[in-house]
Amino acid sequence: MKKIEEYVRSIPDFPEPGIIFRDVTSILQDADGLKLAIDSMQAFLKDVDVDVIIGTESRGFIFGMPIAYNLHKPFVLVRKKGKLPCDTISRTYDLEYGTATIEMHKDSIRPGQKVAIIDDLIATGGTIEAAAKMVEELGGEVVKIVFLMELAGLKGRERLAGYDVASVICYEGK
Image 1 (cartoon, helix red, strand yellow):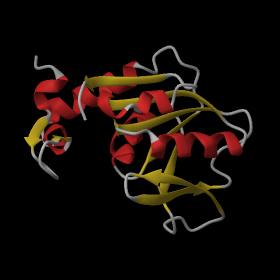
Image 2: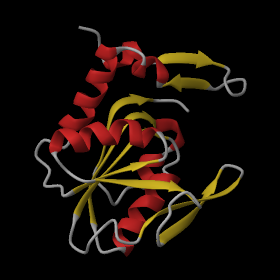
Image 3: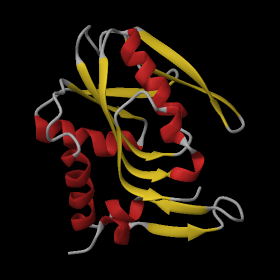
Image 4: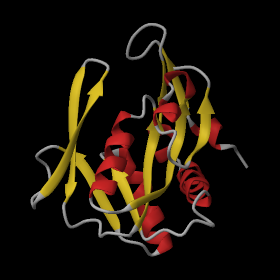
């Protein structure tokens, strides 16, 4: 059986020279790779008491939804600003060039709920930190954050130092 790293397509010099882009679509396009990715991420939740699974737009939806389904837990969307139809809370965070804002429905997390956040990749950690802060604002507790891939050179894990963070694959560079 192949290791999950073998399903990841690495594209040099994209989107700019010196960067190695880690392409998740090569995992999604292979049934065995997709199953291995979901199973590997879900394994990090094996002994975790969790009430709700959250996925961040958009690849967090791809990986978070099947995990929520498998665990028979509700799934909550964290989306870009202006994409959710009901009352929302939002959080703005810094990007390399500018800022971004994400939102979630105000009624998506109830006080005391234990939440796991799922995404495909941790780079600088800004998106997930913002999502975690919204969970806490609504009274939830972030009990686990799970990524398929981690770019350790961008130090996102340091930004999430107060949380229990796991990644299936860790690349040392950026």
